[in-house]
Image (cartoon, rainbow, N blue to C red; front, side, top):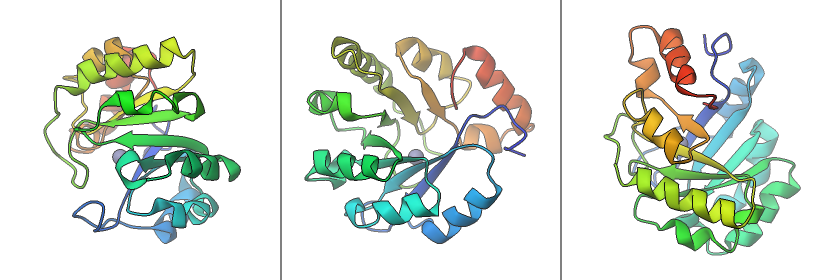
Length: 199
Ligand code: ZN
């Protein structure tokens, strides 16, 4: 269904039961997804010590690999490690982590993922502070003349998509808003029509 939809990417949430209190799946499942998916796999690693597994996720089929700021004491090195595999490199921030912490690395990043819920579970309520936070991040990106995409992840749907796009978001991740709607394909079209966004 998603292959035939207007969605641009598959967003894949990997959870390890350590960095987040939930466990989802790993490389084996991603490999199966890659075999069926006709769109890029945007792999969000909600895991501790992601640097141990970057190459394996790339081999499994990840096109974008996003690690958490909070899980990477040597973030610059980890980003270079992702890029060396040929994947696009992203950093995710938990709701409490300020965007200013990325100012010195923003030019190296293909994507910044702002968590608009606490990572670990689907179906949570959107944290509204993410909207001004998106604006702040957009300002850092513009000032540095970087090409970094801003992705918003958690509680995103038709009710807040426009505010996020206006604040500077480029990529909206929607799970429940799509799959719990009556007509997922139609909901994707409606979200896409709000603006020329990637999703
Ligand atoms: Zn995610």
